[in-house]
Image 1 (tube, helix red, strand yellow):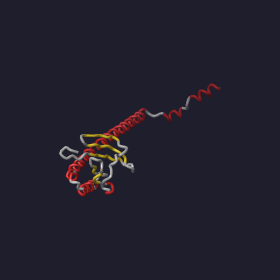
Image 2 (tube, one colour):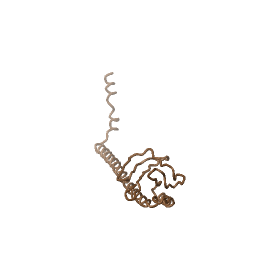
Image 3 (cartoon, helix red, strand yellow):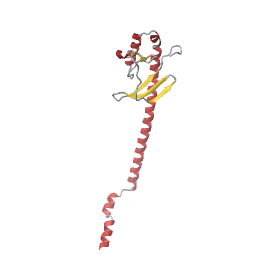
Image 4 (tube, one colour):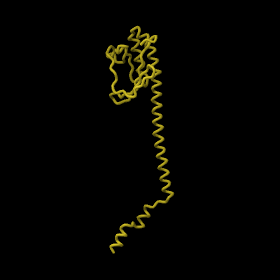
Length: 165
C-alpha cells in the first residue's frame, strides 16, 4: 500500500492537469501576441531615441540661427561701447520663447550686457557640469542642468569684426 500511495502522490490528478492544459491554438495566440507587443515596444524605444536626437539637432540649428543674428548685430554696439543697445538686444533675446538666458561677454571675460544689470561689469564664470561639449566652426555648445534641474542647451560664439575677435 505504501507503493501505491507514493505513486498517487507523484502523479497529479487528471482534474488538475486538465486545468493547466491549454489548446495549441491558444498557446500559439499568446506567444504571437507577446512577440508582437515586444516588437512594438522595442521599435517604439528606437524611434523615440531617433526623434530625441533629431529634436536635439534641430534645437542646435535654431539656436545657431538666433546666435548668429545676435552676434552679428552686437558688432557695432560693442565697438562703440554702447551698453544701452547691447542691453536692449539682450532684453529682446531673453523675451524670445525657448531662450532661457542671454548675455554678452567681451574678450577679457567681462560681462558687457546681461538681463540682470548687477551682473554687468563682473567676471564671467564658466558653467559647471557641462555634458556633450561640441565645437562646430566657431560655435561652442553643450548641455547642463540648472539649479532647478532643467536641462539647458548653451550656445556661445565669439563676436568678430573683420575676422578679429
